[in-house]
Length: 185
Image 1: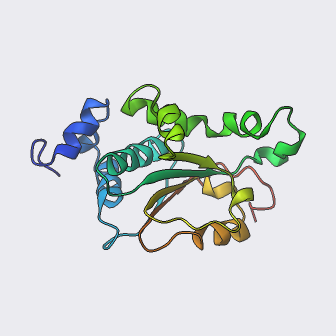
Image 2 (image 1 turned 120 degrees about the vertical axis):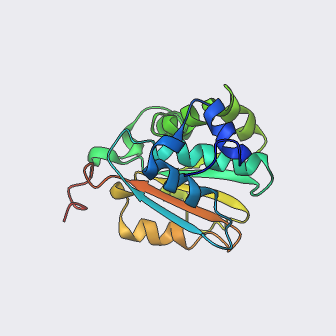
């Protein structure tokens, strides 16, 4: 385990209310999230709901963006849960996608309340669905693919081909919560 005072990142995380040093799984997860891209470009975390997968990934990404390791955080999550598409919901795209992106916004609030709004205005934080991944390229980005168990293999392939080698890609999910019956096979 890490020395509580040996690395400022652990202190920063504890100041946000997260003491991962006492949980060996969260500690190992954070180590891989904070590992330089040259050593670890992709991190995969499959764990039950409530274990901190998303929050810890967002906090690790926020720390890296604050320190200039990456230019922005990109949060990708499928909005078509339980078989309902966003096209049927009332409102514009932000109103349709917003509720699905709430875990990202809430996690960034641990950094400082209002961080998402501030960073979104500066293009340092961006939330998107797999639907809009075609034709984009990500460079110097910390990418979080959340709830990946509910994203099709074709959509995942599209997402994984967007980043350059200067990106870190974190994929989280729980096989206990697959929303699309087609993916349960």
